[in-house]
Length: 193
Length: 338
Image 1 (cartoon, each protein chain N blue to C red):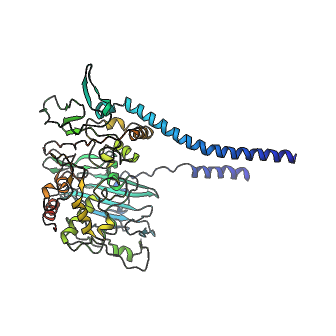
Image 2 (cartoon, rainbow over the protein chains, first blue to last red):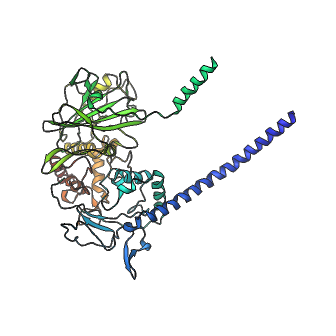
Image 3 (cartoon, rainbow over the protein chains, first blue to last red):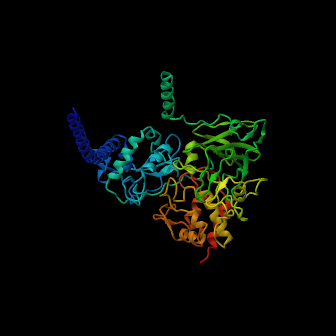
């Protein structure tokens, strides 16, 4: 009986050691798999949430305008100097550039951001917390100026934290592209604020 | 006996394991502890006034500020610039425009890890204030010229006070220093009986690293009075974000308080030499934060002058330019030592 118990205990101990070794490897592999899965989910979310509609410059092709994926998510091209926007009044209240990366309206002129992880001109210095705070508060990095139209933060704030983490993980996985997007242009002072 | 004890023990254990409910702020300001129980027109005896030497600009609002500390509790000031307040600490700040009270904000350390930031909106008569909605209230007071004061949303409260590491901003060693700046912009005379660093140490509610030390007298360290008042103003109005501490370390430029207290002229030199990624209208490249002797080419002044949403600084909490501060900063840049 004693021999049986000893054998059983030794077997359990060996199994525990084996599981421990295997567990170490598995945890690392699991983390990597989690990251891969998160980036993949982020890519999926970006593809269906309309991010390319404004953050990827559009060009005219044989079938009409389409996103230029060679400049995916790089924002308004720094070399695309925009003239003054057309006069807007009455029922026409906003206008968009041919690239679909610059927009004029009551908020002034907004330019879509470079979402690639370039440290100087994109999201390279951003943290996941900053990204989530931006979407949750509607303010740049969660504390700065308002995020301007037509960025639909009021829609994206309904994403879960896990969704936003996935989107951020995907954006950070992109190749950094240096493209300094112009700062927004204020509307004329009208004393209404 | 065992039959009775085991379920009771399980129930007690369960109550520990179940997350405590989030404390909720009272619906009325009168129930927060600010006022005496028997006289709502009088501040409670265990609530104390204070006045930071470099006040935040809020479109010319008149302000009164108070703190309540739980009986017998003390503030841990072992780190002179990082005070740790006891659970139960409450701050209030009352905002008035003209003679009308508009809102009273409350910052309440409700749990060891949680500050609650809310505001109470006063009625027209100034007789009662009720909890403002989480999304804030626009149009809370008419400021003239078509501008209106807005009670901030709770997320905007935390934009300045820190979402991750929440902290009071006007109650710290340098704001309460007894060595007050006589040239502080919008500096206020100390209310009767107002707390100061020295009185806090003397009363035993502020615990320093060494209890035998005299109360420190921190000040912006420079021989230039204009540099002292301008950098003090910027620390009070901009330093909560531009400190390279807290939630947004990447936001630059920054005003490190420990350097302001040791060598403020060095901080001024860094501001002068440093370019910012912010682009002044019509410029392709970044602008210098402070262009010596050229205020109109300085990003600092351009953003202080702006009250447009995309370019104004601070980006929230104000819709009226602080002309007195703009003039002071302009003079400081014009007269900057070569």
